[in-house]
Amino acid sequence: MQIVYHIGANCSDQDRLLKSVLKNAETFAAQGVKVPGPGKYRRLIRETIQALEGKPPAPDTREILLDAILDDEQCNRLVMSHAQFMCVHRRVFEGGVFYALAEDKLAGLANLFPEDEIEIFLGMRDPATFIPAVFGDSPVDSYDTFMQGIDPTDVRWSDLIARIRTILPRATLTVWCNEDTPLIWAQLIRELGGIDPLTKITGGFDLLSAIMSAEGMKKFVGYLKANPPQTETQKRRIIAAFLEKYALDDEVEDVVDMPGWTDEFVGNLTALYDEDVYRIERMEGVNFIAP
Image 1: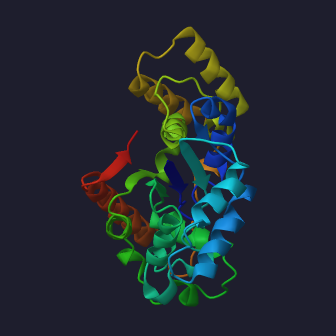
Image 2: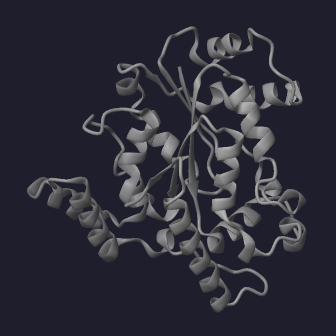
């Protein structure tokens, strides 16, 4: 069986991707793909890993989990999503390491299904907006306490991805930038489902409708009907053009307000992120989804 873990990252899509995938649960089920609601597995998976304390699970653990998650139904592919699979917000920089808990948590997730094919999906985010968002959503009052001594300019997603490849060398790893999701939303839904690219899906424009004005969405849909794009690239160019004109500023522009962070510092963080993404695109064993 294929076991799919969408592991976030924290403060990336706020479960929007999972909600869009769930809209296709019936269509996916017809192809042997199950997308259970998060209540079926999030607490169960977390508590099972915690109870094991790093020890191998009992031989019947896999079947017990699958029975509980799938209600005794069968499938070829199981999709599970949780932005906090690796850790809760306050622990992202625990011990002065970016996602220090990744080794224990990801190994734990894989060990629950030792004979199955594991797929990991990860959406990254510019540290210039990621750090303020995660800190703001955490219960930690002090920025210095939250960062645990890490300099924001040293945060590298490529380092985390290299560690994931080491932790789970046989797993398939799919990565993308959260900033690109309006352009690649439909592809992400299909990739998570592991379905044919031509399969008709629901919710491909869910994110777009949340960040574009109602007038813009109406004109966008009308334009697509009158001028059906012939390729995915063409469709993404159309999306980009309409976003440029009709995007809701409050939804697409992050206001960064952190103590001591100047505009120059924020710009430097973004530049470092761009360099990091360039590096990730070329990493062996990584399926990078670009617009």
